[in-house]
Length: 198
Picture 1 (cartoon, rainbow, N blue to C red):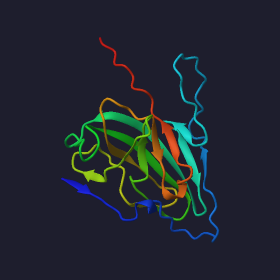
Picture 2: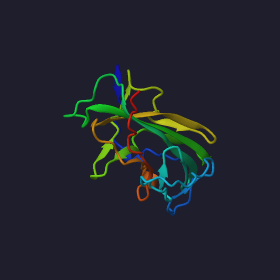
Picture 3: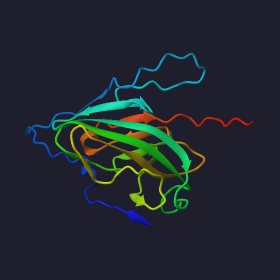
Picture 4: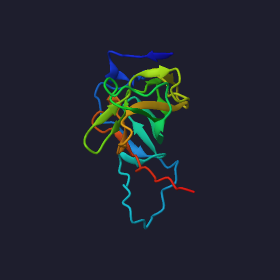
């Protein structure tokens, strides 16, 4: 059985409970040093270079706001994945399921709440695919939580399902909670590798 979660205040998904000053400041996003820097390659195929807000899958961004500091990582992108049934292209916009495996860790500040809603997929033609809010049932496990509070030093991790078209891959995974509305964090999705035949 699937449970559908909706929220009237979807823009308030990063709810910080720590006290801060009256004047808001611009949040900062930086690369953490937890993952090694990739070695230079001489491949003929172009590979996007991460900037302050564009990363490779598996790289971690550190986000600092007035009230909290946390890390966020898009660990992997998988398309297609088996779901409870194929999505309905007329109502959900896709004909297969894809997942982003994501991880968010609280570093300092107060407890805050994480959700699937700040995550989306961005395509070369400008199309954006958002989460459906579907949870439970046969969706890929472990699922990234909906409305889960996390304390300092704790992390949450799981898979976020997206209804996508089978023949097109997104360019980027995007994380854009309200605190980062001006500068979302993005990870480049690699082009699909050709399968080798035996």
